[in-house]
Image (cartoon, rainbow, N blue to C red):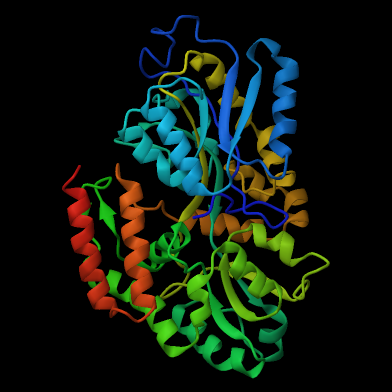
Length: 425
């Protein structure tokens, strides 16, 4: 998935924060540090395009000049961000004190020993949306703190469905029927998600498999579970959509922005994408402003089991200033800052109470739907070798969607490839 899965102004956003941890071991308590665990910090993230994070950190720096935070922005692409972070951490460097991680990287980085474990009792995780906390754990321990969450939503042309006397789809069958019959009447493509072979396709594929009742890995990456009738049903949903034409072939090259632009330019009836699309599709240059609606993603028999996106904040195991980092973590997940994450950064917060705030709902009417979607969502497959797992999923599912393999062949092949990866653990 691209680094910016949810930002405003067209550029996908998870570019955010990094953070501190508290201590469940001597290193987290500062016992092995050459100080009291306090001092200036360096936060590393993907590029902060909206600029809201710098404003938030300025407030911290004014209040705590002895613990000033320096922001390091890496390139925007997720693979480059991950590569630069992992290279630094693998070397044992303490250059970065706190890191803003894609939620899918947490288990991989924790398994490698790069993250300091957190004292869960120190942070207000009970005030977070429950599923997001799971993305920050590995081996039964908390290794990061949820900072931004995300879940896929279904955008649809409300004006067209209203004209046809149709309701938005709640099931895959509804989606297929409307994409096949209504879209062609208006010269539109039926349905698209993010189907280029990259992180976005892994997310779309995992959503389909999980919604059908299947799974990809279990036991935090120790067991392969993809070879099941439910998983074959999920892959077939995507592959058969392309075969039957209600998913256009051009969508096999879509990432977040390509799919967003297709919908925003009035060429698509249904779109699976992240919440950031709402702001852009409502803008003055959008051909669908005031003409679209948002509902939870459909599944086989009702709402889908989506995939959680977003970012977690973690502390470098080699940081010498873990106590300051832990305080920063508390600051960044406070109600006041989380509100700014939403209103200034256009990023979905992890604090549950904000989703029912009347003023915020009036401003961002999709919040209740997003809350429902996050509560129904699950993390991507956890694995200490997540990058290899990710590459295998996207390559195999893309082949199935491109009609180079049947869904049955693709699932069998993916099971073999994942077994080979798991045996390396």
